[in-house]
Image 1 (cartoon, helix red, strand yellow):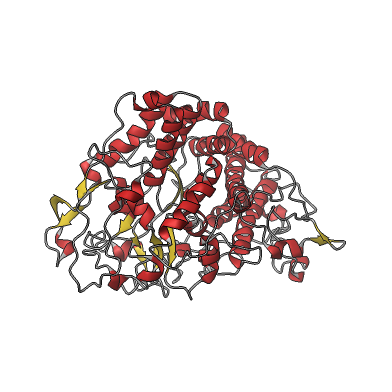
Image 2 (image 1 turned 30 degrees about the vertical axis):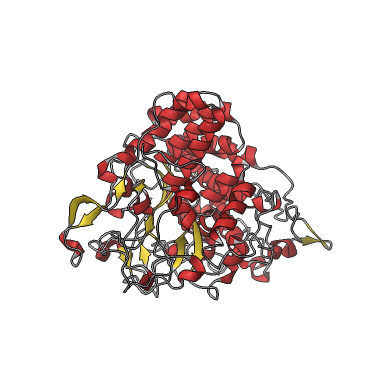
Length: 592
């Protein structure tokens, strides 16, 4: 559902669970609307809109719901999933947003304010979803089907917010619409309750909606299967993935599939396409003169000293870039990608000569990473060091999936604050993600040929020349268009028939894991994938050892399992939930 130009904030009688203990929460809200006033179709729709609005964690003052900077709780998890997962460096320089450095080096402690911002923002979303669930039981002017839709959407959203909390913090308190004592402990495993929310939504939501951004039956099925996967319930996940792949459609009725062009997933001109399963809707220039609806959680993540003005964060790692190297047959180097490194312009000034790497590459690299000498969308060739704040600190690269095109900037960029906003939707689940999760399930169940079929569908799209980056016809005037000459030596192929079965389950899983790294790079998944696969310590310590020889930002980093597999419970929350001198919240193991 496209958000309204002005997000509606409603005060209702259900208590807010911010777990923040400030005294003003104990006072009646001035001008608050009662349950009786809101328990109707219009009131429910308004409160549900508020529950959707919490998805992007942004208020109209460009902060998140915790009152802190929006990027601290960005819903694309660029800090917690991609920077922490080795996709990217923090970027900028060492003096800017140093709290991210602790996260990137796995030295984070419970006092880190970013964690409190994320916690509070997610519980705000839960509060809003719970409000819908209270009101839907009271409304008298809605049909049974409408009630199921309202409840299904609210439970989907609550399931999403709790899924985010569970994968980040592990131990979190469950607060639902029946809770009256909000000082709940965090000792109960909440996966079954997340399952129940998504299962209800899967069984009760319609397949389509008149508003494309509303979640539907198939988005719920995708998230339910993802939940089973995180729990390693492969037998439960398989039939749901099978159903989604065979029958799933978008909320606007498009049969699920991969777009012909990889880059269409990151272009607002063709958003809500057949690959979009659950997307947080973004809109630029919404009339508020702010960027609260235009992905302000990512406002730092544009090349420095560039046409985008700010700010040089979120720089892809050399380790990620090297992963896109392909061999003579177009397949990736699963184990030795860093010994087949891609050439970079590290240490080379923009006014010095440089020729990009001439070796074989997966074209998804150049829709994911901005690198010198390659077209940066239609903004001209990336100039290298002049667009980087400090190469020695965090490398020579720039992010790309979050960046708007020059030709459509008037429509899809939002310049109403000191850094840009964009109308590029935040993709929480897309169809390629579902195919790769389904491949993982099939491999775990021993169905290696089917697993390979799913992986090859993803690789076939990458091999489609429509997904290549092409050279400019005239490098001095990029808007003149592109030539028919690829910008690099692109060579990507499918795994040959029987490859997974011939090499066994361990090999198949390794290939699937690597494909997720390539396909979903810089989309906030990597850290959480590594943790659930049980390979975070080995992978991230190797990443630190390799990458810290190139840049200075990761020195002293060390990943220790199981402690660093989850973030610490924010100390602020532990302190605020004191009952008789003891907190009801228990800190995760290894943190003090």
